[in-house]
Length: 470
View (cartoon, rainbow, N blue to C red):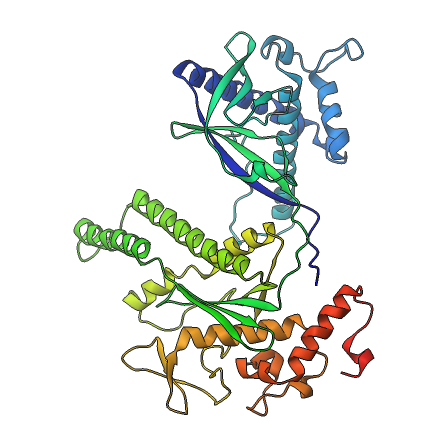
């Protein structure tokens, strides 16, 4: 089976720069003059928005230039500041600034019209504000604003305070997307913040068509174990299992969160309120640790999917799910708040899409409560909630049992069954598509449907299972 991929995917790499103190000053001056120019443009675009708002992307940039850029063909300009204040401002920097400001004003006008129409988050919501100091960064166009010399140096056009010159900056670190032949490098942005300097380099990725094996990677996201992974064939054979739990990072995060409650007690005592921004740096550090955990887990899931050349990665549909267990301010409730179910799923989907795969979601109800062998519901261990007891007396890991059931539901969703009666499970009375367990794949009809699905997909999808009597 050949899996076709979307036409393009945009991903961004960070290329760390190592400028000298003199180059750092020049880069800062370039960002400052670019932001001043964007602030100047905001008033022009907003004033003439009744005429500019209906133009296309290719028409709006020349229309704004005719208002302020003096040429022999355009001598009667309305705004004269660009020649005096922004002397020799490069044309490609100018067009990048126009594109940014048009998008900013367009967003403001949309939000303001929604507010006027009564589409508000609260009844007393204040109208949106157009902020000309947006903290933007200049986009660099190839050949006009930057020249790349291999992967070790980049030449950037910068502002000295009086003139625009070229300076060569060392590239200290970069990722690997530039090494992929099918990736197309787009215009980077020059970013300076927190005493660091880097290029934000977007790439247009075109994944190759895949020929995956007949298996899926199922992921059960839990509290006791961050992710339990099972690789299951279409015939119900479990060929790989893995437990992913970065405990060291979780302990680092929980230790910092515990220090916040200790400092809060010392600050306000038994009553009172904390000031705005209390322990904001610690909270930011915890958010960064959460992102690191999500990236680590998603990277390991992706590694397993690539190792077994899987058709898809299957998750439970947990959007909008809210915890019901645990008392307020209890340890269990805190652990639920630290559950990174959405972040791990989103990061995995983004990385897997770049590799040419797809992520599917299945119904989460009863994935861990039903035994994978079809023997009925399981009973959780009172002392160790991660263990489950089957009706036959067998004890098994509950998360692993859930991941197998997730895989079964994902496989049945992939093969696009048309007749539920042919895939009935040992538990009569429940729909296999919604409440399927691993035992439903042991039915001999399922492998036949899977192989037929591959033949139909290879033939172009023109036929269906009903055409062949299934």
